Figure 1 (cartoon, rainbow, N blue to C red):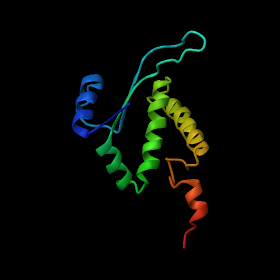
Figure 2 (cartoon, rainbow, N blue to C red; figure 1 turned 90 degrees about the vertical axis):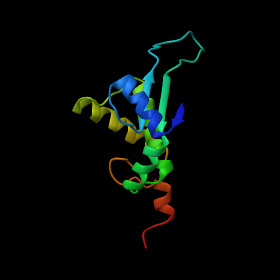
Figure 3 (cartoon, rainbow, N blue to C red; figure 1 turned 120 degrees about the horizontal axis):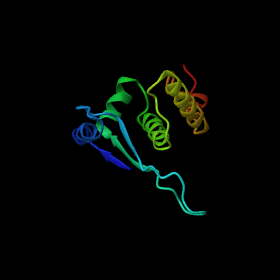
Figure 4 (cartoon, rainbow, N blue to C red; figure 1 turned 180 degrees about the vertical axis):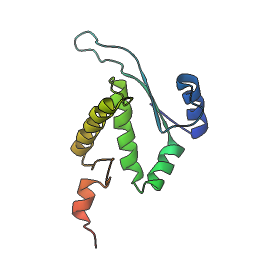
Length: 125
């Protein structure tokens, strides 16, 4: 896991995806499919651009830690082989993200992203 700045993320994005811009999260799957019984599988590497994540959270009126958790889940799903290149893939991946985040006490990032617990504790005035 790498937490970096936009400039370094842009270099990584250019080098590995041929896109000359920063992005919030990059995932680099290891390709390991299985390991001997009882051994951990190395899923790969993930890089998050702090500045981009912070800016997106502010622009989208999301709590930084909630947005970061969403991107960690998103990146992890990429490491597990999920993608969103087609509408069908995106629907499957987003559905999993929503289920995982709900289990973490968060609302869907594709709508209202306020934590469920926070909403219950602090109803609108």
